[in-house]
Amino acid sequence: MAIPDYYFFPEGDPVPDEWMLAEELAILKAFYHHLMTAEKAAYAITRPISDSSVPFLNTYEDDSIALFRLWTWIVKALQQWPASRIPDLVALLDAISKVPDLIHRGETIDDEYNPMGWNILPYFGAMWRDDYPDTATRRHKRGLYIRAQDVESRLVATGIWELWRAINYVIWTLEMKPNHDYAEEDRNGAHHHPLAFQTLELDFQVPAVACWIQHNGQRMYETIARDGLKGNPNIPTVSMRFDEHVGRWAFWKKRLLEIANGPDDFARRGAQVALGYMDETTTSLTDH
Image 1 (cartoon, rainbow, N blue to C red):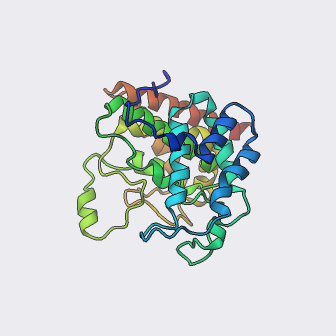
Image 2 (tube, rainbow, N blue to C red; image 1 turned 90 degrees about the horizontal axis):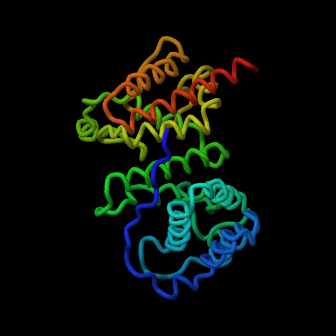
């Protein structure tokens, strides 16, 4: 599969001087030039948030504004640094998730009213959602989307996020019927996970499926074969039923074979790559 071209970025607004002087950006710059390890960069870049109280800005997001600012810079790095540096940035995120401090000295709380830590990279996933300029070409948006999914799949592989995220993504892509009435589900009060799609965009989703299987295929297969969807907290509304758990993996392969012979060149190549990773997964398990 040809590597998607990720580098068609819009010009955007001029960068203000204070952005260049930000402490966090200086740390990213040092990390980029290999002057800091992931662990040292993670500790340094989280200091301004860990060591400060929640700022009083009189908004509903006072406790998350600093986090969103930090994630914005890291997302920009993930989007704009060379693709070969993505593993380094994932290592940085992994190191951030291991920082033992609490966010804003424990003043920021989660949905269960417990002090929030760095362990699940709070709000980071939200930074990817719909973060594509309206003026961007489809090719640009697709490149950013696939890169985002590659990063998320790596974060699942590190154990920061749960494996169901990977399994559910593939279900939403390969088990969703083309005529699925998402709006009707919405009207009936269905709970939709952020991974849900209103319509199938196979040229976006199928190459992303290849990323998810590349980094998590063995654990996905073992979990599905052993437990099916038991324990899945957000079973997709489009999920199909199978007589045997492993039938889901077989169906995914069948669906990818159909797409691999379909009309869209990008989806077709993505399906071929995904099939290759599926074969590698089952072969490695057989060899054991």
